[in-house]
Image 1: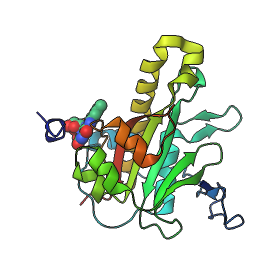
Image 2: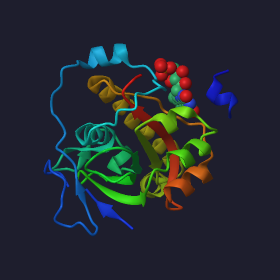
Image 3: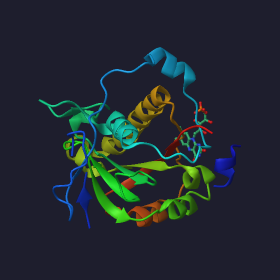
Image 4: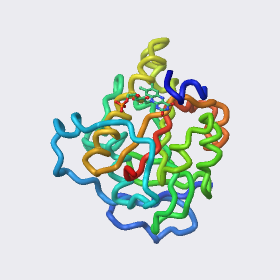
Amino acid sequence: MRGWIAGAMMMVVPVTGQPDTSNPSGGLKSLPEPAETGDVSVEAALWQRRSVRSYSDEPLTLQEIAQLLWSAQGISDREQGLRTSPSAGATYPLEVDVLVTGVPELDDGIYRYLPEEHGLELRVPGDRRGALQDAAFGQTAIGNAPVVMVMSGVTQRTARRYGARAERYVHMEAGHAAQNVYLQGVALDIGGVVIGAFRDDRVSAALRLDRSEEPLYLMPLGRPR
Ligand SMILES: Cc1cc2nc3c(=O)[nH]c(=O)nc-3n(C[C@H](O)[C@H](O)[C@H](O)COP(=O)(O)O)c2cc1C
């Protein structure tokens, strides 16, 4: 049995490439535009993908965080509003938050990714990795990672169209998004691991999630040590 099983306000950042300083009291923080090409093929990324649970102390850059967020839920078709991950009926039930530390352009805190704006909105100030690690039965990957991505699902969005099947659809979608992040991470030399073993109520409290938002995956990310 794996060790991890046994152990079982608002401010926004925009898409123009430069942090938005025009609205310092609140609102959107823009993210750098995602890259459209890279040096690592899909085949190479598939060969190299592994779960990584130990990271160097070096923070990730805003550009890297933006790319990882875009790979999870970013807009890839502006005309139709379609995203990098497939979604049942394009109902897009996933919300993506990131715990960020050590990034010069951002205060430490928990931010919500806004796909349409390709921006960030501050939800909880400060370093909350300790609370999240506690919520995940002490899994050290969380406390050591400079960035932790959290994927949550709002099942009602999909249930309006698909009824009881929505629950499974939302879980499937978290898998699609997480695999995108794994593969994008390989291309950027960033490692991570999907974590499903945690106490929902504690994760929700640490992130101040809405009652409709069910945490599905925690994904610590950093440069492999
Ligand atoms: C649904 C799911 C839940 C997982 N939960 C955890 C977890 O809580 N902690 C952890 O360290 N790894 C977790 N993993 C990662 C697996 O342990 C890992 O994918 C597996 O050992 C295979 O290794 P690989 O990803 O390097 O190929 C989870 C994976 C999946 C798919």
